Amino acid sequence: MTLANNYDLLIRGGTVIDGTKAPRFTADVAVKDGRIVAVGALPAEARAAEVVDARGLIVAPGFIDSHTHDDMALLATDMGFKVSQGVTTVIAGNCGISAAPLKQAMDLPMPLNLLDAPAGRRHESFAAYLAQLRAQPAAVNVAALVGHSTLRAVTMAQLDRPANAEEITAMQAHVQEALDAGAIGLSTGTFYPPALAATTEEIIAVGEPLRARQGLYVTHMRDESSKVMEALEETFRIGRELGVPVVVSHHKVQNRPNFGRSQETLPFIRETMRRQSVCLDCYPYTAGSTMIRTDRGMLDGRVLIASSEPHPECAGRDLGDIAREWGVEESEAARRLQPGTAIYFLMDEADVQRILAFDDTMIGSDGIPLGDKPHPRLWGTFPRVLGHYSREVALFPLETAVWKMTGLTARNFGLAGRGTLAAGCHADIVLFDAATVRDAATYEEPTRPAEGIHRVYVNGHLAWSGGTHTGARAGQVVTRMPATRN
Ligand code: ZN
Ligand code: CU
Image (cartoon, rainbow, N blue to C red; front, top):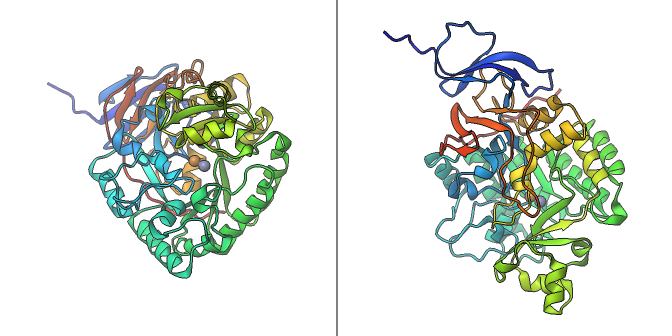
């Protein structure tokens, strides 16, 4: 005689941090058909196909990575670098760079080549990209942005000038197609060569289809250095003129003369939030990472090569050492190492902490899943916030840390039923040990999986357990449900 299984999964006796910033509480969590169906003290007779003893562990909503470049990795990899951190949803298509739409034959200008989208594996429409993610699900959920630089590359013969009327019309059609297919918004990266020549007016025009859908405007701003305030103004203006919410990506103030200026930017952001919808994300490191650049502003501090197509043997080495060995200037060495990626030590710890601690800052990794010496943020961001910044530095309580990577993010991106651990929500769940959770990835050993992450469920399917990927690929394509903000 067998008792009927009431639930698919029953997580017993854990300490729930529900993603709303509410204080933790002890509860059982029951899951059925990919949804959380009960949170509370469940009767001893309750049965499930899988029962997990979570005593001593935190049970939280799966983390949402608000800023990623995982567009192609979702299809090509098991996403172990994210699942191992407790991440169950990623926002793809950031910094103006999206994997769709691309033409099979075209050359990809830097930094589009960072997507690792070889000819033959490209998607010519956003609908085709999302259709493949639905047909061959990734290990995590994904909500995707369409990238302005990608659109420039597919519609413009020359990228070093503003788009003309015809090109703008073509880009608008692509934005509309992407939104119709399920994209949640448009991203830009006017910091990068393919969009450097784009004017504010061009972006407003290209973004026009966002208005009716309340799609998001998400931006790697033109300047995160001496002109950061002007860049914020431009960003807010675009959001205002389109009447849509704005996301300031990986907010930072870089280069030594600007250290401390988060004391200017954050009050400006706070003030602007009273009049229009603005949010921001941040990664918990003082070094950034992007394509190898040769401009002096980027070569200001220590530069670590993460990957190089012509010189793969240089990955993991300092640019200064390489330049000395080659007997050339650093900018010349950088030029020879292109295309590739590097890690730039250009921020001040006090700014990073101030931005992380700012009430409305979400956590986003900005990880670049390329090569074996990536920035450690790819494998370490979320446990680093939980372990280092919340537990060790005491920058904020654990409930706030979890909120910044779950409930806040789901609200800002309009991801209905995600980011909160409550009955009715999707069963994206992470079990971790508050006392031991920590990032193990370092600049030297950047692909070491985090510690203290016990189990990770994506839509009710176990994806990570005891330090191992289960191989489950239960991720869904998530679309945006514009929130009514109060
Ligand atoms: Zn960026
Ligand atoms: Cu980015």
